[in-house]
Length: 217
Image (cartoon, rainbow, N blue to C red; front, side):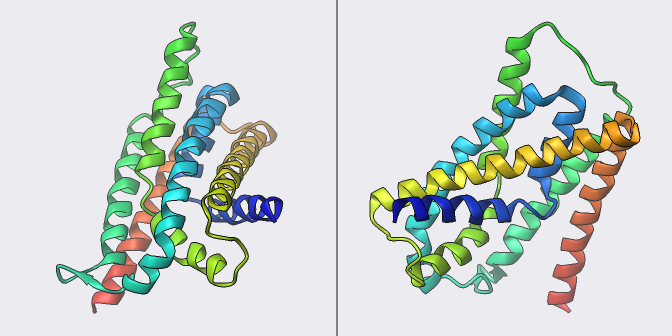
């Protein structure tokens, strides 16, 4: 049963990182600009945060879904709207940073310790600032609990959270590997990759803005 719980955690969280977003696009950019070693530092730190985050959200999921509705107003503002507004801000900021630095060539530094700590810190920050996972786990966490796919004792939730960490690490590694493969296969420069990522982040922000305008009007 614990093995199945672990496996469900892997599959479920890996599915959450299939759609392009700020996390997997960041990993793709790191892979192209700084190499796979820095990607691994980022992924490991991010996945460690993901384990604790998943455990907390799974403990919270069943109670929250019975008392909190994503469409419910919080100070007359939908909870889903608050999450979307935060994601719009994050997409715009990250897209702008990527666009401003689009012409900077990848740097090879001899200070491995600084590069490693920078990637680790980046992974920790984005692991914490990842609000899109809140509605994801509120829905899917409650779904697997209600369908009794996993148990809700501490050991089962710890195993599920560890599986979640492995799932995010695996999905993000595949994104990084695919990004480097595409760059090598089509001889794409880092300038083209950075511009494409920045534009895509802006498109994601625009999509969320249009989505909220449709809801309002």
